[in-house]
Image 1 (tube, rainbow, N blue to C red):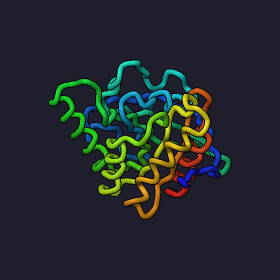
Image 2: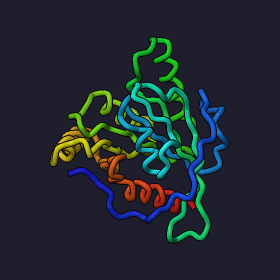
Image 3: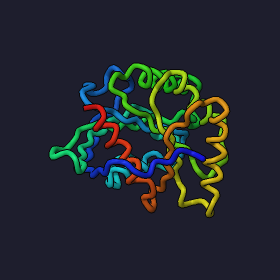
Amino acid sequence: MFRLLLSCAPMEIRSAEYIISQPSYDKCPKADRPEYAFIGRSNVGKSSLINMLCNKTHLAKTSATPGKTQLINHFDIASKDTKNAKPVKWYLVDLPGYGYATVSKKTKKSWGKMIEDYLRKRENLTNVFILIDSRHEPQAIDIEFVNQLGEWQIPFAIVFTKSDKNKPGRTERHVNLFTDILKQTWAQLPSVFITSAIDKTGRKEMLGFISTINAGLK
């Protein structure tokens, strides 16, 4: 069975604002707070998930065209939980997809280097959320990316999106198939979340996960 987090410190988003988009990690905002990055294949529902988490419909730009996100996009987040009188500040980062859209080989190479440099060199990167489309059986490209982050020793959690678009039981079956593959090489599974940007499934759990990590960093 996958490791699904259900009990975490509660969190309320007080504000969420877009800051800047940059083509390189060394041009990103000052690394003075925890940073949580979101990444997944094209058309996985990343922008919709970010908007749902922040409860702000047009925070991250959504598009029917895969590959819309082409830069490292930073958002300034202020949140509050029951244990803190003052809001906690952190960054949310929207990264280009690793599946890529239909672009040139040169562009793919450029995006790949930008993402790798960010993931491996951004000093305040606290956790990466890898988004997986729950409608599909395990895809090799997703497994490869998970294993790559493991080799780079980058903390991450797996987020299965679009659960509202599945028939009953299909999401759990696909999640179990995915984690069964990981069990073949991983001694311990990462945290797993099942989400829907439509009905807000998983919002409380993901925000609680972030809140718990932030609390542990103090």
